[in-house]
Image (cartoon, rainbow, N blue to C red; front, side, top):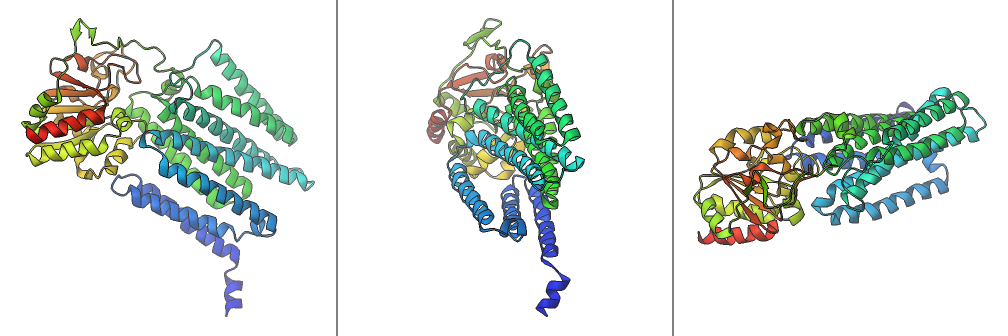
Length: 475
């Protein structure tokens, strides 16, 4: 019976079937990740599908036909686990984008190495590689190396190992063009001759292209870049799937590539800018903000005290909390929830207005607040929150700046003009929690800070919120 079953369903059929199950798992995972409520479940489904795919891959003869291959595979998995698990557990929420960037870059490098290795393997058999095999290898190397080098620079920018502002230099575009043409020429030569020497040339120039492609992109736009590079990595993985003849890699890579491109488009829309503008405008290179308490039309900001603001909050009917990157930096998510709970206990209607690109990645604020167990129904996306802003007594802005700047609406010459914002300016009163008058990523003044309805509480957001919680308790 077992022999008959084995004849009817050979190992290759079982492997293909399990790959199909894993692919379905990846699709379900992406669907789950589209909602904060189901994101954790989606992540677990995706991880389980990946584990299943890895496990069945060990049934392939290419892995198990020699002890050496098996040992190398297990050793690489052990090393990757030893690095990834502590990194994922110890990373701060503020550092999550750069961790995504560097892990994404490693994926691109892996895809490029697979393409090169397979091409070398074909040559080692004494057979000239087919044209389509060389095309796959060139594309995998090009996309994977650009993703790796670009992600490494993005990581360095976000980690502040180098300047976060755009780095521009004379002759930048001509240099980019020369490198691009060099890659094109070497790639065509590799396809025509099948020589691996040209492929290695593509590899070297692709690393250079990845670096010079990312240098002129500023800190505010790096999250969009990371999403785009993530899409590139998916395409590189799909190319390596064609090289290996592995349907799972083709589909998984395509899913990553498509979802990354859709996310890039959504982020560009949320910033009110086109993708070419984000990639090539060196946004934020020029800082025009005064960075002082006096800056717009001779107006000065008004500062207040936690005690005075606590009275304003306690006697309000509706308070809207607008979180931003400053909240993440201060790790103040638990304290802001404590403040919201205290106000709710007093009968105040409280919710959070979430901008699509608040923080450094889409969903950054959602994940941060979910970590503090903020109920999902208290998190309202921008389009849902804005209609309620005119009826809000207080807009409490915690660490946000550009995402509430009215210049996006009423200043056609502003670099952020046209960007959708949270309309905190429509609330009856605005309270800003800021560490200093330092501008946001756009490098421009925020007129809302100088509005007659606005008061500022200077200091670390977590410390200020703790004082507000104590003051509200006795207000």
